[in-house]
Image (cartoon, rainbow, N blue to C red; front, top):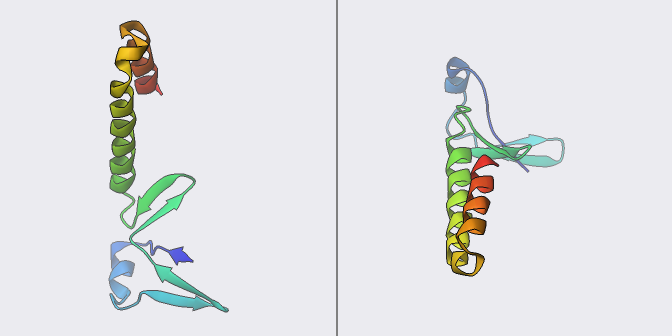
Length: 88
């Protein structure tokens, strides 16, 4: 099981960098830099940089795949698909 520490800057400074896991009953919980919660990637600063980066990578991947079949689809269908993809 993985977890991430969240807190104010003052409280985060109190946690030793050597602390990488805690035991809760019989379960060992290890810390991680990024966690996924309800489909959103969160880091300790709640900046969502990792989430935006992975979303952009996914979008570029799918647009590239669409580019490879645009000849078979034709201009009108391709334009409509890209428009719908961007609108989400």
